[in-house]
Every structure is written in structure tokens, then in C-alpha cells.
Length: 249
Image (cartoon, rainbow, N blue to C red):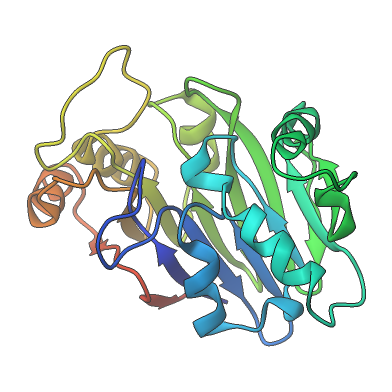
């Protein structure tokens, strides 16, 4: 299983980097987790969007879903035959309908290209990859994602503060893809609904994670400082996320 980072910036895309988007691939399966600003453009460098098996959106903040609009137009005007399965949190379909009403007179807007489904916390399978959402704690309803293939496991934090459900799902995983929006000198806004780099490190260390991948950086964060902060708590391998990086799991 390969993980490719399509964007690692939080809140808004920065020069040379998109917002959150993560492509998980096996030999025959392609799953996109999150589709923030700029992600769809970079996705097309890696894979034909017609070959996606599913999209999962962790939560309904624009830096994690807004490029669904671009993807919808691409699929609407391409030779894509079937609607793409797009999985979103509870109540998100109603939100997307409200959004689309201001974008187009075409109704339904997203459903022309997508088979929208609101997920729960069961395990979903696509080819040889399974994915299981789990609740985390953020300012809106947010879900981490546990992805498994051939006895290897990836956990994506989504946007969250430290919480029991994240810690529970991290035990002995191969890769922890963790947001660290408050690391590296980022401004601190209260209430705190994100992770510090050191907290990502502590979670990885206490859960016996093999590899920590940091993502969702604030625009002005010092990414090397993020590594140092995480390494103060985690003794394993730390990877600083960057657009286009592929990690074999």
C-alpha cells in the first residue's frame, strides 16, 4: 500500500502546496482521503481521476473538501461512466446541497457526478483496501481514518485535539499521518482544536507507532522545528510531509 501526500497545508493552500489530500493506493485500488483546495489539480499528476474507487471526507471544513467542486465539474464533462462513491460525515449531504444552490441552477449538482453517502463508523472495503472512520474531537464533526491492507495499517488523524478515540486506534499501527497545525511556531487560537507537533509525537510513542508523518502545517510554521518538537516525544522515524511525497506501507 502506498500513501501519496497531495497537499499538506492547513487552512489555505500555500505557494507550491495544496491543502489536505491523501491518496492511498494498492495495485488495483485508489482511495482519496480529503480533497482540500488545490488537491484535485495535483491528484491528476498521480492518477487518472476516473480510476478512483472512492473518496472519503474527514470533515466539512473547506481545506478538506472544497475541491469536490472541481472534481464534480471534471467528471461531469469527462467520459466518466459511473458516479463516484463519495463518503461524507453525517448531515454533510444537506450542507453540500445548500452550498450547491449558490453555485448552479443545476439540481442535483453534486449527484450528477457523485454517489454521495454519509458514513458511520463501520469498516468499508474497496478491492483489497479497507477503511474505518472513527470520531475525533474538533470544532466540527470530524473523523480519523484507519486504513488497512495486507496486514499493514495507516491511521490518519484528521483535524483533532488529543482524544481517547485517536489514541485507541493508534495502537501498533505502521504509519500515523498526523496533523500538527499548532507546531513549529504556529499562532495559537483558542479554544484549541488541533495538535501540537509534540502531542503528535507523544501519541505515536505511547501507541508504539512505527512511523510518524506530519502534515497539515500552518503557513508560517517552521517544519524542521515541527520535527524537533515531535522528536522530543517520539523515538521512531519522523517524516515531514510535503506535496508529492509517496510512502510505502
